[in-house]
Length: 115
Image: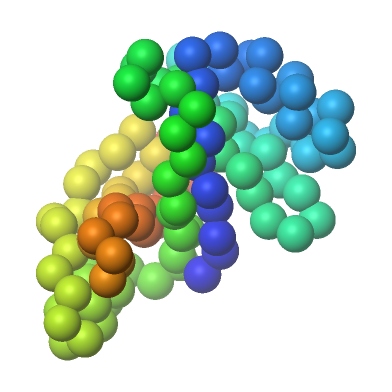
């Protein structure tokens, strides 16, 4: 599983430019330009266009290669109740609250859906 924090911004292009100056590379970009992945040597930062209330917020996300149903089963067996898998523009995701009540997103990407 790969850790992928998501940074929400009102200006994806400007934030992408900022993090590229810091040394991150531009990776996959959504076709409409609403999000971009910025790989680095130690992980990936995802930048997503957000509403006014989300700008500046960061969310913890993970990317998995295993079926989300398997992840959900493991979570339930450990006493955590995930939401249902949701069809997203990049593949599927599910959300679950950690013990502090903070939402965590787990993504299963379909790399053929975007560039």
